[in-house]
Length: 260
Image (tube, rainbow, N blue to C red; front, side, top):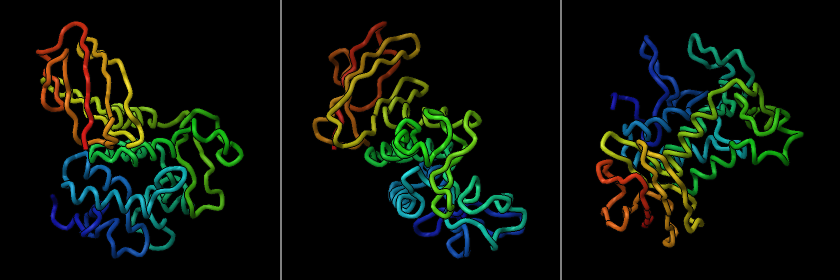
């Protein structure tokens, strides 16, 4: 980990050429950013203790009913030299808006820590399909991700903008498939380790992996959120959450047992 990037319960955003830290606790504005926290977990830079701490702080400082804001508080008069987000009003676009694309990475980060309740909460908060009852607030086309939603410092909190011009669908898909559903292809096979709400008792899915069909049943009778799983493949107990590609038949029955 680069020296000086960790500040006890958060990671800074970056370091300028002159050595000035961006997103540091001591900054009067924008002293906590979303993406460094998510990516510290996804990259493996953060250990589990650090990951839990930063994502807890994201929930406390950045989360809203429409998803997590990009930073807090917005820049108004204390930005670093060259900060383009000053072009935007507080809580819009990059200046503390609820940018849609990073929501997928937050879903994935929570999932990788086995925190399924929070992963699914972020999915629901940022999903266009859950906002039909708020059409007069959201205003853009239904069922389509906008580039960003105005955050809590805006007088138009909840209004979304710039639909059909964002890569959000792909990042949320990664967060949901690799994170919530737990399907993670690796070189020699596939890991299946879901991260779901503890209230879900299970689910089933069909996955085509390297030309082989996997009929997957997930058992969550213990009410787990994720992090630990055991797989049986065609009746054989594999002992953990990894299926070697060499063991796959053309059609496979896969049972995944989630554990606390």
